[in-house]
Image (cartoon, rainbow, N blue to C red; front, side, top):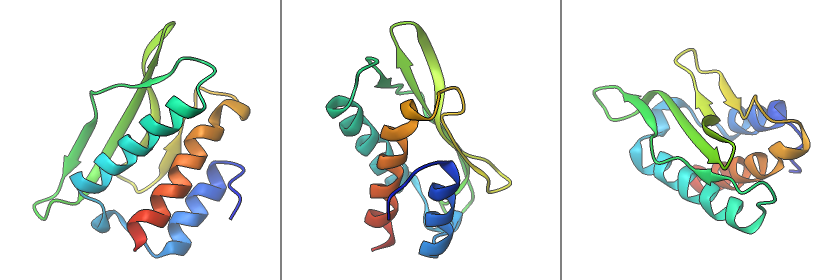
Length: 116
């Protein structure tokens, strides 16, 4: 599937059958590491993953909400991915469409990886 926008990413997640109950700290670490790799390879804006990931987990270790951030030389801690408690997944709302491509690519790879 070619990911073009945030809605494509949300649809891929939904169609994969994944739910928040399938995502724990291990899956979040995988997403963060994939993003780090993608930004290293395709980084015209000098972005890096901010180590301050904010997650709330339920008693079973699944996410309730989680926020992964990126930094650049001209900003810190902007959302890369947001898993909101209402199960809405957000993608780099601060960036324009072309600048979101590395984030969409990362999410696409991540869904394929964790649904296995």
